[in-house]
Length: 232
Ligand code: SAH
Image (cartoon, rainbow, N blue to C red; front, side, top):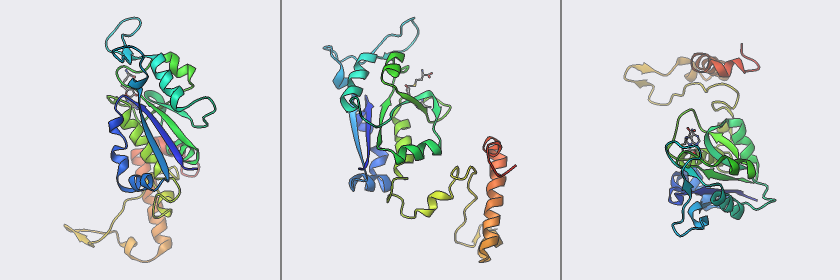
């Protein structure tokens, strides 16, 4: 069974967007994964097809209604749907490569994209939505966050990445940032490729790469290093 993504959004035209091109687009066309974008507004019940209302307690902005969103969720993900239900949210658990791997190994995901100030808390609780953040900044809507999450997941699906090995050495996969890369020409504006990389000595090359990975991680992400099992 292929990975099945259902995205609930007020802007279904944003999908597949960037995911319709390149690796993800080819995998979508070949059926390695599937994507449906559901218009939340279709589940509004009033004449004006209202999906939001003013915040209880006052304040600026609007809040997405629990009842409309719940109907949309129940339509795409009835009880018994094995897929996790995610809500893109800056308050959520920060997305990690480990969670991306888990999702890629599962049946798919139901992804709710918020807009306005966010969604009514009661639908988060009542439908068991897992809040996921793509970083400590505020987007205008959950759609770009959903595209980011799906891009990270889809490239891990079997057969999507041409060279499977390239996934294992990447940043975060071993708890470190990746070493720098070089390719031809040998001389670029007077800068040379580090000699060790053209030495043909694979043991030395591996040691250099490991050293660079540790150095970059120490400089840029000491938080990762603190959590690393081997490097101190
Ligand atoms: N008032 C909210 C921000 C709302 S932004 C707050 O201060 O927390 C509108 C929508 O964009 C959110 O409901 C969410 O779905 C999405 N969004 C914004 N930033 C995000 C982020 N960093 N990660 C994931 N989703 C985000």
